[in-house]
Amino acid sequence: MNYCKAVLAVLALLLSSLASPLASAQRPSPADAMALEQQGKLAEAAAAWRSVVRNNPRDAAAMASLGLVLAREEKYEEAVPAYKKAIALNPKLPGVQLNLGLAEFKQGHFPAAIAPLQAALAADPQSVQAQTLLGLTYYGARRFEEAITYLQRAAKATPDNMELRQVLAESCLSAKKYSCALEEFRQILEQDPNSAAAHVLAGEALDGLARTPEAITEFQAAAAASPQEPNVHFGLGYLHWKMRQYDEAKAEFQRELAYDPKHAQALAYLGDVEMKGNNLDDALALLEKAVAQRNDIRIAYLDIGTILAQQGHPQEAIAALQHAVTLDPSQPDAHLRLGRLYKATGDNAAAQKEFARLRELHQKADDDIASKMSGSSASH
Image (cartoon, rainbow, N blue to C red; front, side, top):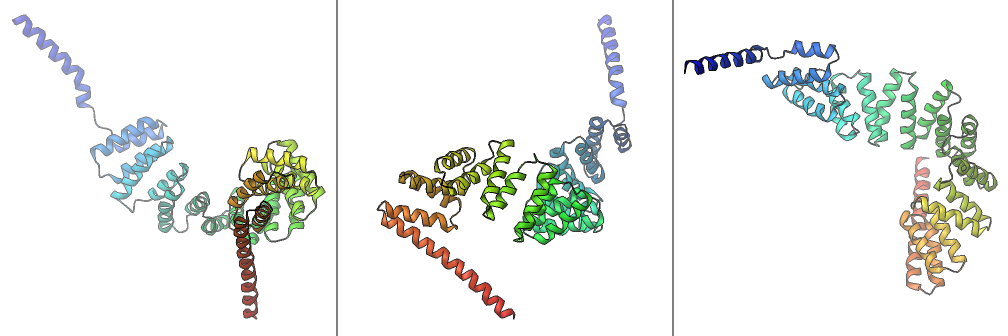
């Protein structure tokens, strides 16, 4: 009995000695967590901050610090709820809204990033970082007009930031504010005259302003600066195509296809050029290659339908033209060709339906012109 008691006493003493360091260890403090951060021990720092907030759940600053460490570990999904808890505890805690917006932005959650970034900018209206992030967030959300407002302010504050100017210019272009886009691209080109991308986008802006010959010049500069830049030769070919300069367009489409044989749009527009030259078999082969790559190129289906109708395949032609109409019902040419084909095959009801739609589209176009003319007269 005495022996057993002695063994149990020794065992109890041993267990006590093993447990004592844990029992006596101090819980991590904010200072401990910050020290771990400074040493770059982020995982340990996160664990320390978790302990701090577990022991004091209403410590907003500690919750925000936990979010920041998690963000530095690129654990943005975990950082976001930590930031949100910190904001709920103390909405005026400096910097947390900005960090929350940044964490959402880095996950590509652009709509979710907008509100915290707006709050951050409201708290500090002079913050270039908040203005830039908000502009980039609107750009990522494809809300280009709103992006322009903030990106212009940020670009004014950091005039040498060419990457920011590029995004601003693209926002202007996407919002169809072509003069704004052109001004930004000109500033980019002053810094880097050999920027193929800037020449391309400047060309797109000029084309949007109906200054297609000048747009061609910009695309030619882009092609000279970077002959293998994706889409440069296609873009140049398309501008020539618009100007009905089909020989020049054909050469550029062929150059694009030399670099990228599966370029669907180059195949489609080259097919259109061949069709216009009455090389129907070559055209059809190119157009079929185009739609094998992508099924959303309207001109390819329009031309396939036209060629198949001429070659005596009316049902296949109808299917192609119907697809062209589906891709863009507002374009009259497909309705016209489809109506004529229905009439030729004896389907008068379907033909009349297409012709009626054609008349509606022409009436709308006439109304648009009339409204513009009357508006112009009223302004004088």
